Every structure is written in C-alpha cells, then in structure tokens.
Image (cartoon, one colour):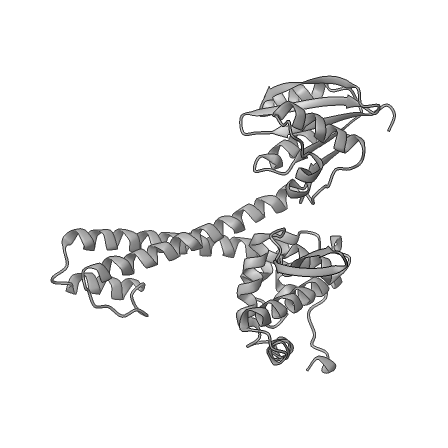
Length: 342
C-alpha cells in the first residue's frame, strides 16, 4: 500500500531489532532498542504514520504486541514454524531477520497466527500455570513414596497422600532415619500446597464472568469435565476461526502430517505443529470420555473393530470430541444427543 511504512521486529529478551521500509522496499530506518515499555513507546511514537508491523511469536510477543497495537494501523504476529521457511537463508543475524520480517509484511507473505485478547491470554496463563502446579504435585507424590521405599517403610499406596494417614504413618515408623521423615514431611507439605493452589485457580476460572456460561455449556457434553472445557475455551478463544471440524482437529494436533512424492502419499505420526496444551488434555479426556458418552463408545468400538490399537482408537475418540466441542461452542446451545447417534 502506497504511503504506508512497514516495520519488521526481531524480538529478544533484552533487545528488539527493527527495520522500517517503504512500500517500494527502501530502508528508511533500522537499528535496535532496549526491550522496555518506555523505549518501545518512544520508538512507536517516532515511526512515520501510518505503519504496519510484524514480529515472530515468542515468549515476549504478548506485551510488545499490546504496547504497539494502539500506535499501528495493523500489526501481525508471525507463526514461528512457518516463518522459518520464508526467512531461511545462509546468512542470518538479527538485523537481517528484522528486514526479512518487514519484507514479509510488505509483500503480504506473513504467515500470521491468532492473537487472543489480553484478558483471555491472562486467563490462559493462569490455566497453564495450574498445569505446572499439577505436574509439581505429582513429582512431590512420587518423591514422598520414593523416600519411604528407599528405607523399606511399609505404607498403603491408596492412603499415602492423605494428611491424617500420612501424619500417623510418620509417627509409627520406628526404624526410619529422622532425615527421611523430615524430607518426606517437607515433600508432602509441598504437595498439599501445589494441590490447594491449583484447585483455587480452577475455582476462580470457573466463576469468571467471561467463561462461566461457556464452560457450563461445554460441560453438557457427556465426557467433558471442567478442565477439558476450560482448556478448550481458553486455548481456542474464538471457535468461529475454524470453518470446519477438520481444521480444529489439525490445530489440536490430532491428525498426522502428510507427505507426497511421485504421486505416492505417505502419512506420518501425529504432527508436531499443534497446540500441545490442548492436545494433551483432549487425549487424556478421550481415554475416559467413552465411559460416559454412548456415541464416543461406539466410535471407540468401531475403531478397534477395524484393527486399530488402543492408542489409535483413543485418537479417533478425541477427534469426535473436538467435533462436539466445536459444534456446541459455535452454536451457543447445550449439547443434545440425537436419536440416530445412539
């Protein structure tokens, strides 16, 4: 577009390299600034108006995107994996990367990715932190059991992580070194802390006004629990960005990559281009969802009947679950099982 300037940003933790070009590709300005809100504001304020910007999706992209968006006519966030194919070169450095991103935006070749609103990204960050707490809690449980096994202590596996049983167990351990008792008590206390915090996060997210009705609607699908519903809502954000269930399945990482050469197609394992948070939750949900949903049970049995193993059957169930989630989320109506589905 004539009269516009195009800004490419190569974002790092401490520095941001930039390149400003005209519509004809002439370099107007290039350099680097410190990655601080103050310098970013001054940089955006002195850019020639109007301007269109682009940057790669990184850990630091969110706050930079929010700071620059009010100043820019448009600003795009590039898909990290796909941007590598466009910016691949023998000679590579931060200054050249910024110039190539500017060219990608200028030529409308920027492979953009979806940027959720700041509020949704904040809630998503909380949910992902909840996942981190769960993993740490499991580590503490395993460590507690490992410490007791090292010294030959006898305990009930089912009751070990209950507070009353655990405290009584420590009192009754006679031939166990005091150091082991102290370490076991510390790891058990950490486990309880992680458990209580993750439950507090889930309770807060369920009650959030932007999520409450949506979560309740998604949970009308038999086999969909609160964590699956929360993960879908926050990771997908706007379900209407998927025109069909196939694209949603691909985004969730539940389909394999395809490679074709000389007219011979080849399907590989599940693609690595996916939302890993959504993929793991959906696979775990699919393992149990068939017990609660007759239609999903039929999908699993049909998959096993054609010779698929249990893992492949689970993926088929997860794909059907995605179709249900997308349909309910798009329609805004509660799930209802049709007679032909039973």
